[in-house]
Image (cartoon, rainbow over all chains, first blue to last red; front, side):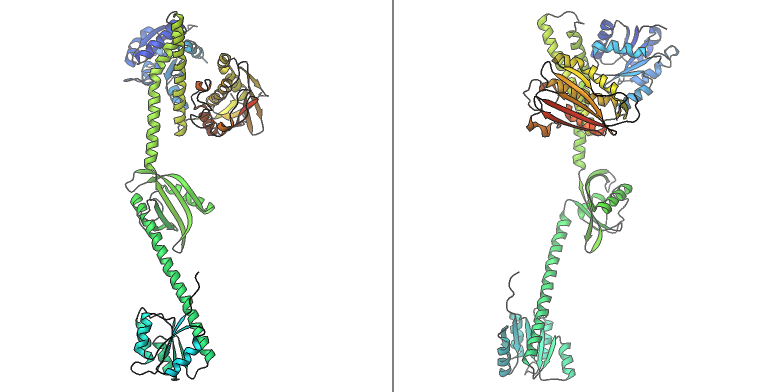
Length: 129
Length: 485
């Protein structure tokens, strides 16, 4: 198993947020990204991309975040890949239900692009605990 | 009470001598009118009813019995007491006198003191009868007025005795379709809640302005303010209840809150990319900026941060007011809480040239709260303290405890809280001085949210302030016996 986080599958339907997060993760974080506009794109690209972490928006038209994650986890090679949701809804019960849906952690929107990469590394570091 | 006028006595006798004698006897005490004939007596009594009539029995044309019968047959004269004064001493005569409605029967020859005593006693009886009658009429009138008020009141009003409605006004019927005779449970209020409220009425005499969910006639849920009280109504001991329908108000408030929540939530999507872009521009992620542009981007970035704080605060406020803010209450390690709060706040203090320090023995201490909300509480108090501290100032986060309580104090030596502002410091959008450049950094909701959160978690917040010397905001939280994370 790789010891550093490198490849992230990222799913977000809002063009501008996607562009901001992409810059934060590529330019600041130095990650390699597979950026998807919706759940279906993510399902198409995930297996061949072999992500180490999956970062998903929650509210999306069509397949929402939790549904997309459930379908991704149907792919055998992705069963153990940690997932993180990004959402503006972070009441305890909302966070708890996202964790139940299989998320390792939840990042609140609006997020800070300057610390997003570090936050993901920290979360990823906890994946085996 | 006005002074009672002298009673009038009408003396009726066909003998002039008797009239003169009786008049002379009565005049010192009463106003006396006389009539020497039955017909004249009736006319005089009807025209101006006297308080008592002394009536001779044996008279030509119309005897005393007939006069009395006619007096009693006429509503205008029926209530005038009649005393017969007669030479007929037969028991049958006397009985006849009482039969036609006399109150007394005096046989001639009579003694003056006896006549006076009997007149006096009959007048006294009549006076008290009249008083009772007047009061009854007054009461009836008041009762009618009360009924009128009840029937036209927009407040639903109902009275129940031993679980059955015995009086219901039209407003109450219209709302809930309840009729007199209906059982008071399972009609418009959850039966269990009703029992609970009745128990409180039994214990305390009344429940006032209690907000309840009601069910209308059509089955739709409505909101009401219910007042219930132990009450004696038309002679029966029971429970009176008043219901004010506040459904429209509740609906408007909910719509307003939902609107605010939706707008605020929708604002966060564009704000996420605006703030993200500006943060990276300001840090040169998009390339180095010319110095003029850099300062403009910095202004935009700072203000996008502030806008996010404001939107977050508005959403928090809405959640608190709607009772939808969730609290994951558990044991919170005070050392970890204090450490994290100070670490998080350090950069903010440094930017203002203010230093944060901890004070107090916190090892092994734990309190009961939601750890994240507690962080939010401390962040609010610590940032406020720094904001109002002079450059180079010191802000202390001090911890003390009793067996029941953990007290967290945020102390600063800044400008303090002006006397005039103290009573509304926890109100929404309350700032001491809107023109204060440093105060402008806040949203005006921070302390209001902080207080609401502390209270929802079972704590208490307060402050003391000596401007320029020492200002202390304290939060008392229940102490936890389980020193957990």
